[in-house]
Image (cartoon, rainbow, N blue to C red; front, top):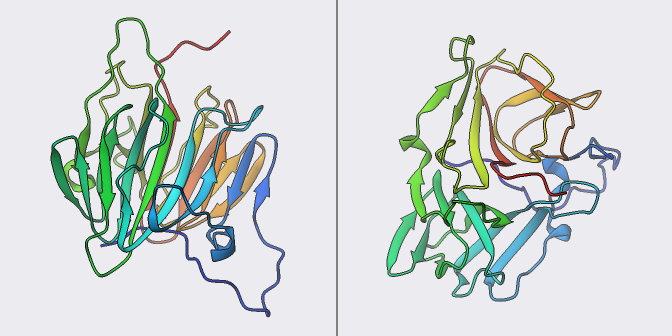
Amino acid sequence: MSYAFPPGGLPDQSQNPEGTAVFTEAYAVLPAITQRDIVTSFLPGWQNTRVWILARPLTGFAETFSQYAVEVEPEGGSATPEPDVHAQAVIFVASGTARLTLGQDFYDLRPGSYVYIPPSAVWTFWNTSDEPCRFHWIRKRYEPGEGTSVPDALVTHETDVPAISMPGCNGAWATQRFLEPLDLDYDFHVNIVNFQPGGRIPFAETHVMEHGLYVLQGTADYLLNKDWVSVGPGDFIWLRAFCPQACIATGEEPFRYLLYKDVNRHAKL
């Protein structure tokens, strides 16, 4: 089992550079074909590792989170992965395996493993296999709220999290919620959203939550503001608050994506 991830490499000279990448005031689309070797970065404190930085806070755009796709070669990893003590994170493994330590505990991660890491956590991440480990890493500074506490760490797997169907759609649209939606200790969620072929969001969602959306499987036509965009595995969509959005799953297999959203806090004035 594996999940979509940046392809790396470099298109050959026969390719037409005109593509489907878009950056607007309301949204951005980074197709998988744009996620190549020459746009990677290397992170302090990480060994034998490269990263595609797909989103970072931008004033006037999406401002709450960063989202990385991280490729760790054999024997690579970090004993000091997170430089910001206020940052919390979700890790979702796309391919390969790794050893994660959280405090005194350790976990062997595999494709589909999901980890919530609270701020100030002491953790390490090492690839102990002979193949690259590839994972998605979403980071957000924790925002305390009245009566809330910093959540505990969580390690689970997507096969252990049921897909809950949305009302009135007979299972065509369902969400795997890894973090408890009614637990106000959490100030962000990262879920997997699932659509069966032909399933859809049947209205243009328009809301305060920002999104990072990485397509894990399948294809869809996605409404972004006033534009319909075709997306597929490895494509990344970045939405600012209040950008209208909807989708219709196309093709013959489920359409699935990893979705970040900020929740459960007052709007800053």
